[in-house]
Length: 392
Ligand SMILES: *Cc1c(COP(=O)(O)O)cnc(C)c1O
Image (cartoon, rainbow, N blue to C red):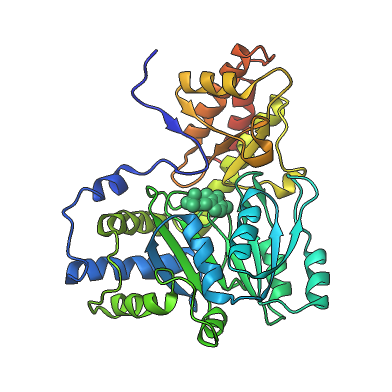
């Protein structure tokens, strides 16, 4: 059956609100017009509330999450600097590749098996033995759906000279995350994940400690476009209501971000964290009932924004996901070493309980078609029970 409407339940890009999409089609303004300056300024100020930072400085640049990763590194680190990379999956590996490209001296701590988590104790031991310029951590590694102990590691890094760089691409505005309170020095995300805007924007904030490190650089930043020294006067000008130009901002994308940030703040960060948490928990309850195993080895580590699920014996990635599409729900396959072994469901941004219920129904139906024994409706019932308990 051909369908006109599908649910996009992947860990980015996520589904966007219709007002957010509509704002994209407004007439393109001059990037130095007073109306656009106002929109940009409100967006920067709103994002600080989303990141839960007062002291951090915000940058919005055309690009994707990977650009933000690179921007975090290239502005704070210089050739030969020691960096400690904490990796719980695919995007931790990407951080290593970026740092090596810039000839940094990389120490790499990786979980033994994907699904496990980084332990703060290990980080503490490392930092006692050696001085680092930066410590990097992926908040939610999208490949494993493990949420790292950002708060605990932040407590450790703050007492050293190192800055704490956190990849929030699959977390910010969904998973509980507090830039100032958790002592994060560089935090970034991309528009297409929990922020709920189409792909195209890198959003990154630097703490005063990180900006001081930038100021003290001996070597110029090895990228022109990514140099925050060139962007800062522009962001400052927008905040002060003055026109300024370095490189043309993607005007219509900023409209969309402006609209989404407005909606995010209307919901409120605490409510938003709670919604994500409950939807994720309800989903896991359904998976348990269906006897499906999640990638995080402990439920304590399970993220609120995405869940990775192992295929049961006999169910293949190709057949399962083909059935899901026929059921009108798009889910993602595995990344890196979990490719073909798991599927991933993104539940972040605009996600509602009814979206996850539709997804669970499609999973039950697809599993049955793949020959896996499921009591139809049993997963749905488990999820509904949790929603009822939380009165949503
Ligand atoms: C998606 C993602 C990225 C990469 O973002 P792109 O926009 O695809 O470049 C980086 N880190 C994490 C944790 C992600 O989920």
